[in-house]
Image (tube, rainbow, N blue to C red; front, side, top):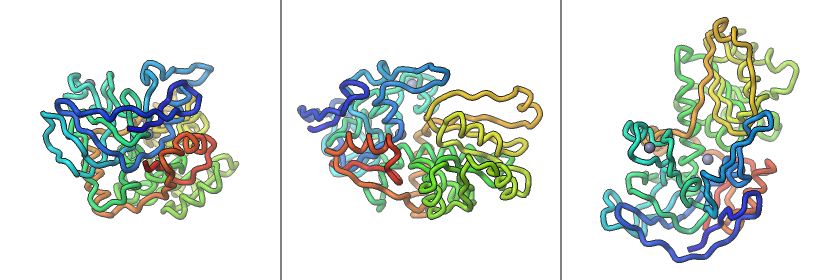
Length: 350
Ligand SMILES: [Zn+2]
Ligand SMILES: [Zn+2]
């Protein structure tokens, strides 16, 4: 099999040819037909996440290179271990990559994505920048009906991440306008889910005029530049003077989180999803003055994956723009994404 691996952090991905693995026990071998390139792959490849204030958290232990990245995988079952159940040769499926240890409290609750000792594909284990991937159990395979292959893979990370974040926007403020900050791959997916899950198109904030245009073309009710002086006033004008019920920060930088906090109304919720990095502070009395909530969101659970797949398979969610590249362009695609040159979501096809 062929793969593109992180061998040294921050250095070009290396093409590796090795024997295709034979699945053991409950394992399933999937021949990859498409794999998305995610923003978090940039951080994993760089070897650290920026925690702000000059602090970095290394991805060395998590990744243990050489490692094949790629956690948005779709493919076809080509071999089964002797104890594999629930799949057959030829099955086409999306692979749920947020796999846990299977033994801890979180895994027992069906919240494997929060497992403290994760076995995630493309991060802790080899993933999708390859022509084959070994999946530990067929229960992580989800059928995708008639969805196009290149679109289907995106639901494994950008899809489930956006879906779970948008679901967290439902609270006492259900019905109030919401704000999506950042119209990259995941943010655009969030725009789509806001319509289908919450029943209303969001306001979008992005510093890039091309991404604002894309957001408007993809269903945003308004697209604003958060750096503009009048941006907070614009939010108030768009929300009858009361601010948004929830702001979903798909960027996760100090500036984006601060903008989110300024945009939410009383009792509103700031949901932080993005991994840009940094740190931010706010006056403590604001919690008691406004009743605001700050919530984190990380990918989504297997049950949310089922729920989302039922929704997207019904065709009720309009697809986001996709940029298709060949697997051999894995490194170049990662670099383009890093420079912000990819409009929509990049997908590698072997
Ligand atoms: Zn991802
Ligand atoms: Zn676990």
